[in-house]
Image (cartoon, rainbow, N blue to C red; front, side):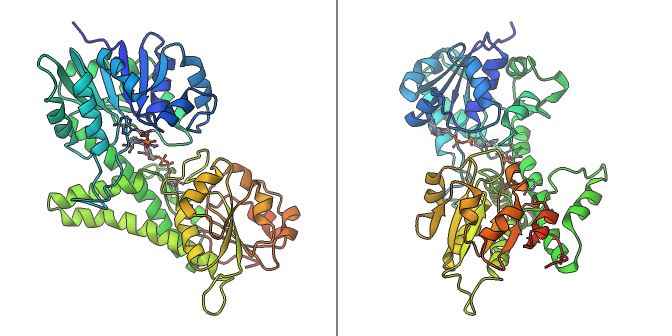
Amino acid sequence: MPLSLRKIACIGAGYVGGPTMAVIADRCPDIDVTVLDLNAERIAAWNSEDLPVYEPGLAEVVSRARGRNLRFVGQAEGAAYVAAADAVFISVNTPTKTEGEGAGKASDLRYVESCARFIAAHATGHTIVIEKSTMPVRAADCVKSILATARPGVTFDILSNPEFLAEGTAIRDLEQPDRVLIGGERPESIAALAEIYRRWVPAERILSTGLWSAELSKLVANAFLAQRVSSINSISALCEVTGADVEEVAAVVGADSRIGPKFLRASVGFGGSCFQKDLLSLIYISESYGLTEVAAYWQQVVDLNQWQKRRFADLIAAPIADGAGSLRGRRIAILGFAFKKDTNDVRETPAMDVCRRLLARGATLAVHDYRVTPESVRSELGAQGVEVAATPEAALAGADGVAVLTEWSAYATLDWARLAGMLKAGAVIHDGRNILDAGAVRRAGLILRSIGRGAQPNA
Ligand code: NAD
Ligand code: UGA
């Protein structure tokens, strides 16, 4: 008889677990969905009107399903739901290891392992265990060996079902994915999970592969995306010195259907919790198989990104530093702190590296963001020399320099004619995302330096 998944549980109520399970529950009212997490505060927020994750459209999806077939519970209460589940997703964090073998590169699987132990302790009958977290290739072996410690008669099958959503567009990505990937060893388990996605995803977009290909494909997809950003960012520097315009170059290059136009926006650098971590994981895996050239190739994508962040901070500092290179007494307005627009997430945000470099040279920063809380800014940067501004205007008042670090749409329509008088004379505006209306900034008599754009008329 084909397997049918009627009760599912998900361990990890983060940026992936929460939205993914909310969309499954929304699209499959007959499936009972429980999300559990060790973090009681996060669970309380998922049960409130103030969700812990900001994503356009998420609140509506949650409000339709929560209390019907979607619940968020703490770990202790979650044990019974894991026991009753036909399938359990593991959607916990897999950060870069900070200690032990592979520190600084390898993925830290301790949270995944602890989920596997929890499942082994509580599951009953036959359970499909689904890796939703991004894992190193062959990590399923480690999950399998932990599950093998369960009581006699309790059986498991493992699937890898990595998530490709991007923050800020998570609901759209989940509702209309380019593809859903299911890797596994037993066709009946793959079919049972595919049956869930089939409710709203066309069959041809549900790809099935072996376990190892699924695990590796997720890392490779992120590596290729990050590589495009580093590629265009490397060209941004060349554009600045040659007088070319990176936006024009990207448009021309991207018009080739073999290359395509997406992910060619020059920026202050890529951020987010996954690109660097997944690149480092790929590098570590390559090294551990002795593939040093492969590792060095991907390392360069990381290195270029670090260089771009340093380079941008130094461009901001250059016109206002004193003879000794110090920024003491200089106030810099930072517009945007999230790692991209439409999210409140600051994990690995390029803004953090840029700000830290400016702070280290003695600058005072006035940081504005539309979604990031003052607590998040302060926990990344500390309080010394950092003011969190409630509005862009408050950040700009009295600034010696301005840096746009996140591409929030509202920054594109700032009224520079009105704001120009609030800045110190000679202040330079550095657009790290190329979103400002260059004509409007210049007409206001201000100096604009855009990433990847060569010398400009009033510069
Ligand atoms: P997150 O840190 O937002 O959430 C992880 C949650 O797991 C936390 O709330 C944490 O408390 C909980 N947790 C950890 N160990 C636990 C345990 N033993 N029991 C119960 N709860 C536990 O992480 P995230 O951003 O949702 O990422 C999760 C995974 O998905 C990672 O592997 C990541 O690489 C991958 N991923 C993330 C994104 C993204 O956009 N953030 C996209 C695709 C894939
Ligand atoms: C990325 C991938 O796009 C998702 O497919 C993947 O599931 C996810 O990582 C993950 O595994 O966590 P995310 O990091 O949320 O998603 O956001 P992206 O839109 O990919 O942006 C990443 C960073 O690259 C941001 O800092 C963004 O500003 C930057 N970026 C992106 C550019 O600088 N230029 C571009 O053209 C595109």
